[in-house]
Image (cartoon, rainbow, N blue to C red; front, top):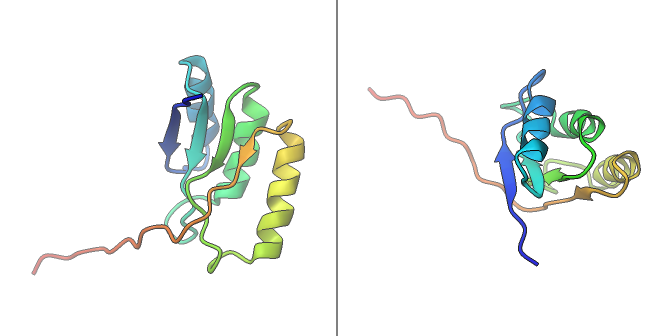
Length: 104
């Protein structure tokens, strides 16, 4: 079965609104980028998304197991899985480095 998921940047105060819009417009799921130094905390934002929606899948796109302690990730996702009624997907990968370039 093919699914279509949206990817969003976690913005405090806005991510749950994006999740509701995603669900209302028929997407199958919403992935939240996990970049601890550049955006709102992804796991916290996913908890708000879980509370704001009923149907869509939710997950990380992606979590880096080097910058996130695996035991903490496991605990956080177990909690999110329970709170969301089993709608969580844990995306794990290296992510992509973000480089800020300054022109001379």
